[in-house]
Image (cartoon, rainbow, N blue to C red; front, side):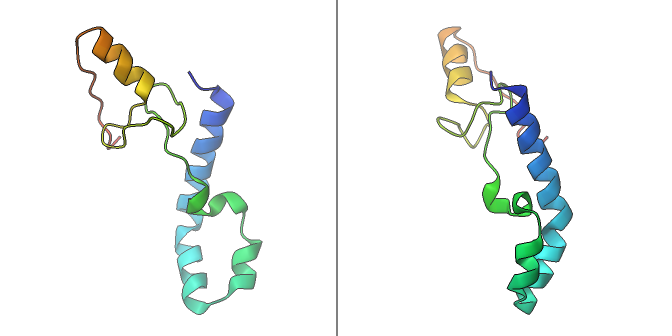
Length: 89
């Protein structure tokens, strides 16, 4: 399991990206890079990481189609059952 602080930080980044998306798009279209620089760093979508939907572990070994990490996949494989989650949550 990932630390709850890193999962919370990632959720906060996702909210900031959604909040500033329209403004960032508008400023990029104008070419106003000074105003872009004044926006919060975490509002840039490049700073988002893919995390496992179940454990919250980082992007290393994450299956992007199902949204689950390699540890969850291995546990499901070892118990002879498949673990499916809804990725569009």
